[in-house]
Length: 202
Image (cartoon, rainbow, N blue to C red; front, top):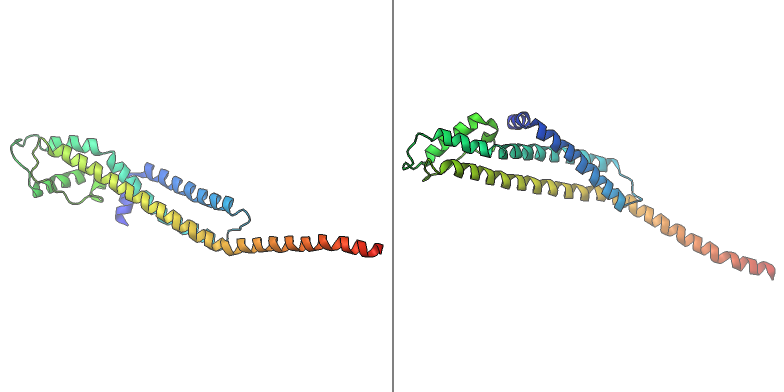
């Protein structure tokens, strides 16, 4: 929970956009379902699914917006690391421990990074290459993280939509059956009227 609050604090603007998009996405899902099942009526269970789905998607949105915020730091991170290692000879190779120390400095400068990345291994890099390598790796990891959050969000939407449809399918089937019964009754009545008129004439 503390990590989520920290992410919320450092990416408030993006998080608000994420929540708004979550609300729009859920509303759009219900609209599409209603357009497909025109004669259906959402039950209490259908609405409850939407509320639960909102919390799941909001959680993913917070993580997603945090990752987008970190991704925007990448150029600054590269500049910062270059300043940290500028006095180290280019012939000296960094160890795993040295990489971790640099990452700890980055996390102190941008606390949000520490909640997403807590280990670094750039053994063999020098002061000429480590800044770019760490920046590129951070950007690549955030891209993969964002992709996973999107996939999870889509999965939640699909599962939620299926459950909502299941909660209205019985009600929708009853409407269909009612229409079929009404149509068949109307057909029997129209057939019977001419016969009665012919019998009257006779």
